[in-house]
Length: 466
Image 1 (cartoon, rainbow, N blue to C red):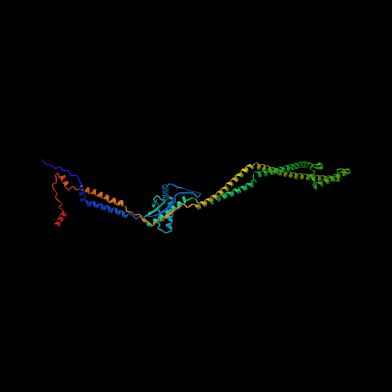
Image 2: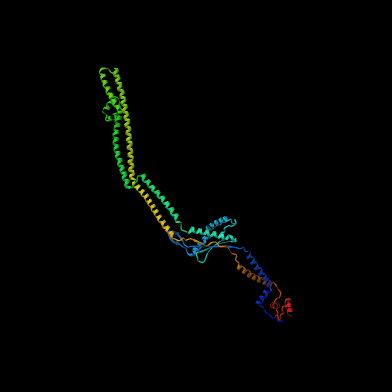
């Protein structure tokens, strides 16, 4: 019976260290290669420069000089809002324009372009001091970029948080108010002149007096028209007669005074003479006697002239009647217009009161603006300016290139782990017996004794020692 000694060897720390020491050059080579690679990569990173400015904000927003109280947010809200304003498109647009102007004026390189992504903003502790930074790989460009962003933010902040300029506001408002006041006063004068309106009582008395005068004139003119119509009617009847009949009517006509002209009187006198001559001749001669015929012819001619004078007088008096009627129609029109104007006095009064009310409101507004202007000037003189202050302009650019110590530390550490893994992988691929435990495991016998390493190194040490 063959006796077998079954011994189990467990892996110990010494075995682990044996593997590490046997493969130490593999591990060292991997660690060195990784460390050198990480250092080289970090060294090749380009230099980055940054310039920073500091600004102080006085918290609170004043809506008006006439309202001294300030509207404030919590510190966290205020800080977040200010940082967002610094990084806003409005500020960047201003900064971009100022940056381009500075490049052009100072004859700087044409490839210098403002980069909004290089701007950073932060707050110092729990203060109201904010830092504005601009970074770039070009050192000289950082200071210009930081200054333009700072100036653009200060301008934007002043424009949007400062209360409005009171001087221009009051000047414009007073100018508009006085212009409107002058316009309405002119309208009132035009209204009074056009409608002859001087107040309800005065205007009513004016129109009542005017109506009374017009009615009296119409009454008088009605009498004149009636008399003239009678005269025209009589003359119209006379104009339709002629000869002896006309001569007889004229002797008894009620309109005889109308025909008192010298010509008519001469004709009537001549007719009287001829009629007397005719009677004398009629007693001596017949109708065919030349003297009688001559007298009859003269009488007929004078009758024609008398009829013509009557017709002329008729036409003259008729024209005079038409003129009187026209004057009466005009007076009646004025009288009707006066009655109409009297009826519109209440409406005119309402319009006049509206105009006066508008003028009163404008006058009150002018007084109010003048008073408010004085108050605003006093408030402006006694109110400190709440503004933004630049504590420090963009400083000299400083290098932002810092060692990436985490990467520098993790590289060698990970390389050690990788090296150990490769060492144990190579060890697993090496099937030679390297220890007493492996010999016992593979041979299945116990190792009674071992011979020390007799390699060249140990031999040289033995000779040297001897």
